[in-house]
Amino acid sequence: KQEVTQIPAALSVPEGENLVLNCSFTDSAIYNLQWFRQDPGKGLTSLLLIQSSQREQTSGRLNASLDKSSGRSTLYIAASQPGDSATYLCAVVHINDYKLSFGAGTTVTVRA
Amino acid sequence: EAGVAQSPRYKIIEKRQSVAFWCNPISGHATLYWYQQILGQGPKLLIQFQNNGVVDDSQLPKDRFSAERLKGVDSTLKIQPAKLEDSAVYLCASSLVPGLAGQETQYFGPGTRLLVL
Image (cartoon, rainbow over all chains, first blue to last red; front, side, top):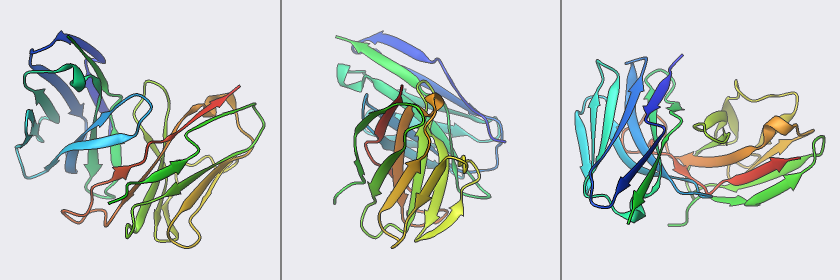
């Protein structure tokens, strides 16, 4: 059974600092890995999707890396802003059934 | 493009009562998912539909939860009777084709927040 772990559970940084969010998974037989953002009282918004054959994906200030063999992904957010405050969830898609397994998330607070 | 719609947004009920949630996926999305997200945890898949057929309901507590997608478009998730531990956010998501590159992204609705007292 795939286990997805996100550390830390919560993070508070001053505005302008770079953010580093970690995700680890136990089964490397994945189809892809996705990072989501969840704002309070709202659904999930997909930020980045990395196929299993890729090493990283970038979108604006966001960069996500994937090391499938070691079961790790890292989400970098450059020059954080208060609007980046949210919970960030990592999820892996199994290669056998294409189902998402989520981590519990990292709640980020960016202080102005 | 309209997103995934869910209603109601919030619901408070007493234990042993019944409740129903509604989801309308993105137009043209054949696959529909219901997830349960308990506070402090990631979403857990309850049931997956492909058109109007069930693909996976292995984690659906079938003694109290039921779901249907009769015409292959919108869907209803029901809990009867509700327990305290059912307090959670119920998320609906839809996608085109799971496992097909470029078409597998799941789009999530805003969720229904359920509190069982």
